[in-house]
Length: 208
Image 1: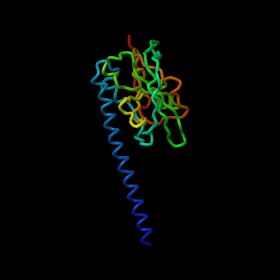
Image 2 (image 1 turned 60 degrees about the vertical axis):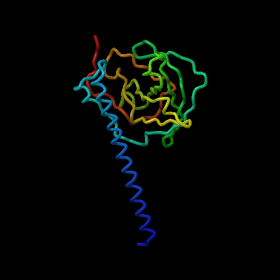
Image 3 (image 1 turned 180 degrees about the vertical axis):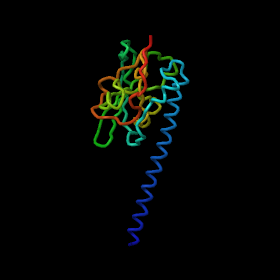
Image 4 (image 1 turned 90 degrees about the vertical axis):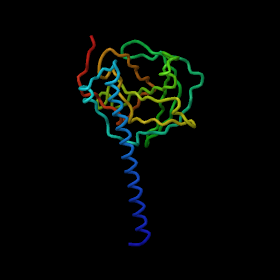
């Protein structure tokens, strides 16, 4: 075997090893994120799930190809609008920015919103909200769509990283009695997002 071929094989093994290590590290980080997410249900007194229910939560395997660096453009002079919820009430939001994302051959726009229901509340001050629906709904994932939490501080140099592995179900997926925003038509994707939280396998609860 020539020295060049040996060197090429060594470089290939090194690259594959680095990629595998990076994927493993990412999976570990995502698992920690999901652990905090599930534990959050047990710490919130308003939570629809208890310690037995969280055993029925399911997620897609970590897939770093769904962690996208997107071009981000702020909306000029956005006006507040009323976003409907599945319970029939509305919540006031701003269309804060639009992110242009690419994954393989797919190119799509994502609208990011800012909650204006309580503009003085520090919990909402820098938060951005990404509600979306996709082709996996009603099959692998919740029919009402899923959400991603972001921050205005995540926008740097007109870019934002959107990790669809962190998308989660609204509480309406588990129980009645919650005001869950309906993803606007602008954030309906024709393709399936096989990432993040799957359809809840536990028993749906009905509040009296």
